Image (cartoon, rainbow, N blue to C red):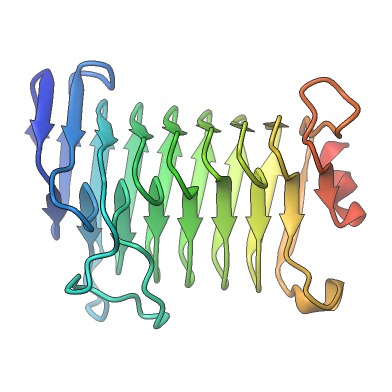
Length: 249
């Protein structure tokens, strides 16, 4: 375990083994990235080994990823796609990560990215003000999001390939595009959450040629996802396609 005292730490951190990174609270302990084109916190588990690393990130703020993607960046995703590495937190390989009472904000590209088989549990945290996606998942990554706020990003949560996300008791709001956007074989479970004031749809599936092109799954209930004519409504609409209306029952 590494316990960080209050203050601003100007550095980038790379984690390749099981560890707990604990701050004194998100308002008191800030990690501010200084190396352009790289994640502020980069968690890289082994891609082929049987062992999985376990990492906890608690009570701190992660901010300041700047610049374009670094061409010399290591650890390209097994999906063959290179996301931009100027992100707040990047998790890839065989890694299980718990992010609790943390804030990830104002990063040049994404707030939190999960690749390959990475898994994350996000509890009581804030992901806000990132210029592209608040959270992005690719490959077969998985995330469980509970009691968290994802706001003022371009897209709240972007889920693609066969990635899976479960969201409970959370708020996704004020995005410049969709609150939640799904592609390919993505799986979403959305329960008792609020999707508000997004400039696109609250929840949207990318359908280039119709519903049959999406082979993932969406389940859930008890959500508040207002349309454009309702208070705190999503500007384009609550859901797209309309078959997702069951999420509001």
